[in-house]
Figure 1: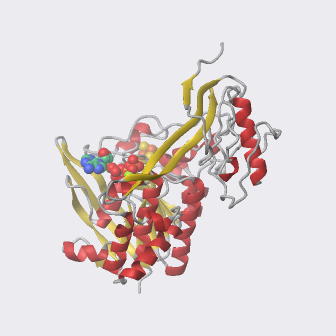
Figure 2: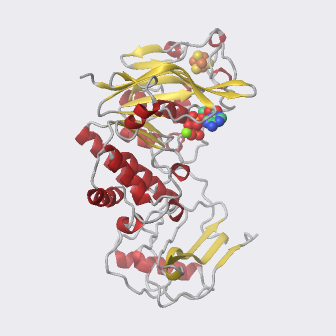
Length: 484
Ligand SMILES: Nc1ncnc2c1ncn2[C@@H]1O[C@H](COP(=O)(O)OP(=O)(O)OP(=O)(O)O)[C@@H](O)[C@H]1O
Ligand code: SF4
Ligand SMILES: [Mg+2]
């Protein structure tokens, strides 16, 4: 059995437009081995999603496959009848779509949608499928999974929908997972949990993955191979370590220079001037030439081929040997450098007691039997020139809720980790910053109050779901003019 599970050769996907064919994918070649992750990165509009959809044969109506082959385990997918392809999708290759909101069926409960994969591809019995659905939803970090199975996509947040998509994709334990920005709508703790789950599946089952992402941090953790796409073509492919040590294509190098950690905290971020060229153009030169700082007359004499600069490292640049290895600093994933505003400046945005509750209706008469408190008593301030960062809640303390008194704790400016300290710190911060809003004695702050103030991050977020049980009926959201 060959080591290679997916081999893509000369893939072309074109979209017919009024100004001629738009060559979204224009001759893409790569291969993925079993158990490996191939990360596809590149600017918006460079053809990453179209490449993924071509592999799945799920192109939008206006698009067509204009050439190339996609071999899955040695079998060419393009000549397959649609009926055969339906057996391949879900079971052999599954996909996490970039837009889960439009990819879930709006008139089916999420439980039914996940169960459908199990019933169709694994022939699981009804009862076993129901149990497995809850297990899958739990494994992707969906809260109250048993309860959620009966809900419809419109009742879920964007991140929850994305987790349902991930559960569906993993349900039939595919050989290859195509994941198009699978974690963009997730907060960092769930993101880490989902990425761990994917890595675990790879280790146990040898699942291969085509991972599309803009996040080089995720690439550095997950990828074995990296492909950089630009204007419908791959411009660089290398093993992960080599790519991070020595990116060779001028476009790849610019991607690194645009990272906040590389620019330095006070430095300006590098930008790549100009835009991806119109893909309706017929190219007779390097596609990056109008934006490339290293461009020379040779770059306009035809499209550069992929040149091998080291074993398994190919670069589409005629000057790659002259330019040589990157002199970039070590890739850093530090917090972004921010122009520090004045922490004590009056807030530009003030939010107090913000609440958003959804009624839970049951029965024939659809009586309201409860409420989902999506936002419940949020307070925050953003001074002019400052950045507000929300840190996701820590693991939820079980039953240790307390009733902090406002201002009862000193604010030390350090992160609180214990439940009591976190809740008191949050309450104290609220009382200091919201002197006109009286703290209510029924605040249960510690359930998920988070408070984070560090030198690097100049602002504070306080998030308190379920905070105001008997809340004052007020919600104040106002813009305040900065004091002169
Ligand atoms: N349904 C469509 N109709 C017309 N053009 C499309 C359609 N889908 C994509 N395109 C075009 O195809 C090109 C590649 O799009 P694609 O979605 O693959 O980009 P991408 O690299 O995934 O970008 P992003 O990072 O923003 O998701 C773009 O020029 C886009 O405008
Ligand atoms: S071929 Fe020329 S224009 Fe294209 S990336 Fe290389 S140096 Fe830049
Ligand atoms: Mg995309």
